Length: 138
Length: 127
Image 1 (cartoon, one colour):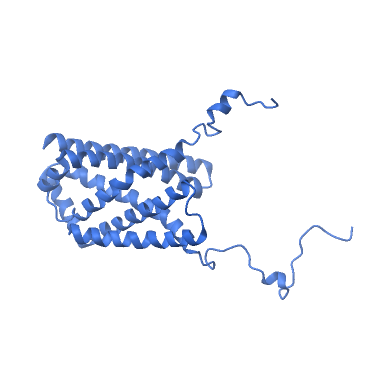
Image 2 (image 1 turned 30 degrees about the vertical axis):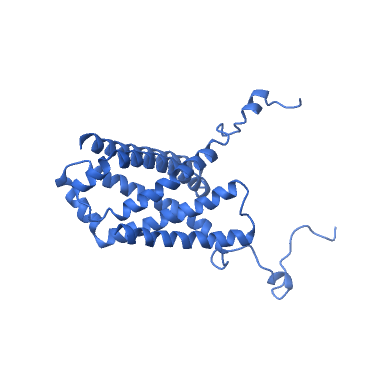
C-alpha cells in the first residue's frame, strides 16, 4: 500500500495550486445572464412590496377624505414619487424578463448569444417603458 | 411489474409533493394574465401622485378600473405567493424556519389580497 487515497496538498508554486477554485461570489464576475437572473428575483420581491403599498393606498382611499389626507401628502412627496418611479421600473423589468422565461418554457432563446441579447434587451426595454410611462402620465 | 407504486399513483402523476406541475403551471398562467394588467397598472401608478381623495375614488369606482384592479390584485398576489415560496425554499436551509416562513408569506399574501379586493369593492359599491 504505497499509494494513499487521501488528497495531498500541492506545493504553493505547483500548477495545480494555480487552477481556479469554485466561483466565489466576491471575486467571480457574473455574466450578464446571471445578473439579470438574480435581478429578476429581486424585482419580484420589490413588486410584492409595490403591491403591498398599492393595497395600503386603496385601503386608505376606501375610508373618509379626512383620513386620506395623510396618505395623499405621503404619496405626493418627492421620496415616494421616486419610490413609485423605481417600482414601475421593477414591474416593467420583471414583465420583460418574464416574457423571456415564457419563451424559454416553449424551448426558444436558449442559445448563449440570444440569451445575452435578450438579457440586455429586457433592461433597455424596461428603462424605456418606465421613462415613456412617466412622460405620458405626468 | 416490479414496483410498489400503484398504477393509480403513476397515472395521476402528482409526485411526492402531491401537487404535480400545479406550482409551475399556475405561476405561468398568472404571469400571462399579468402581462396586460401590469402595463395598465404602471400607467395608473405614474398618475397616482397628486391625485386627491375624490378623484381617486371616482377612478377606482369606475367599472373598468374596479374589475382590472380586482384581477390585478388576485393575479399579482397569487403570483407573489408562488414566487416568494420558491425564494424561501432556496435560501432557508432549516426545515422548520422554512416551513414557518412559507406559511407566514402565504398568509400575508392572502391577507393583502383580501384587504385590496375588499377596498376596491367598497369604493365601487359606495360611490
